[in-house]
Length: 163
Image 1 (tube, rainbow, N blue to C red):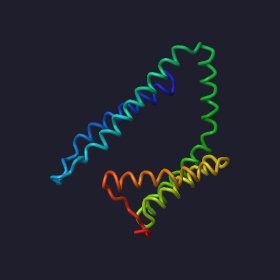
Image 2: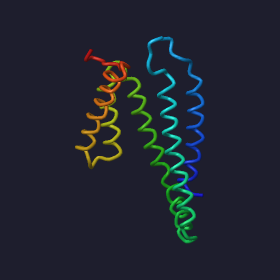
Image 3: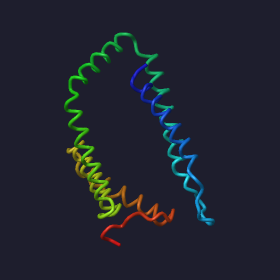
Image 4: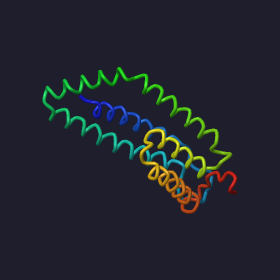
């Protein structure tokens, strides 16, 4: 057992619960709806289940292939990481504050602007060296998702001041 197999197993259980609760969503009240409200949660749950199963299988294969000495090194590294926990707690706190700010700014600024700001701030906090890449992702990703939802799926996201 290693981190990948344990994480994969836990997320597999979570994804199965996610799929189950997705199936409990009532059907759409719109008679002409082509895609019902269950489709996206179930699809996300299935994709998460597949990724979790792959991670779990990868972890099991890695655990069987590593000799005993490497496992001892992993345990030593895990103990060293636990000593660095205060930094991780601070990092988690900063990320949670950014996420809270994203939720607060979502409606007033709209999807594109608030998501671009969130992605850029988060990626700059986690990796300051690649600011051009961070800026590109922060602009391109929200625009693609916005166009996909508004134009293809006819699910209208908040536009904020650009309405």
